[in-house]
Image (cartoon, rainbow, N blue to C red; front, side, top):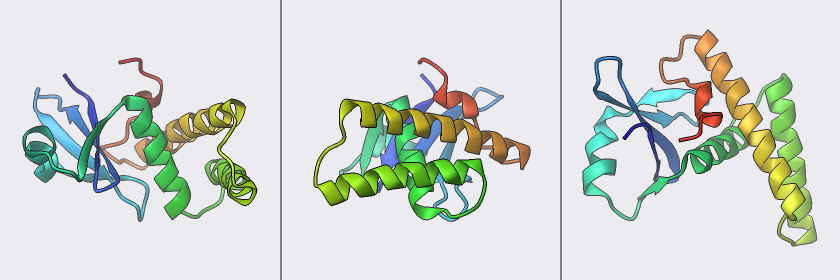
Length: 140
């Protein structure tokens, strides 16, 4: 059943159904925050496996994608302001040497779900064929 989500060498990968009923693989680009075709990984993540591959939930996929975008990308605008907010919370946790409270965890998760949708919508407008903002709002 698709879509399915994976971490491949700590990089978010998604497998989605194509319009003709096939499967397409997409891997997050740490340079652009967009999606690179990853059809070469389909068999590996589905059938071969290995220590570097982990199937993850939809929410884990959204959270890891936004963690990476917030860590590796720089820019201006509302999405990047929200990335800076999460970064500031995480820096405070590091300075205070503590884990986030349930409220802080919920705040970070909520911001990341929001930035995922915002970033994916911008990717769609730019013509990225792998973009899908509905991933963060779907319940499957």
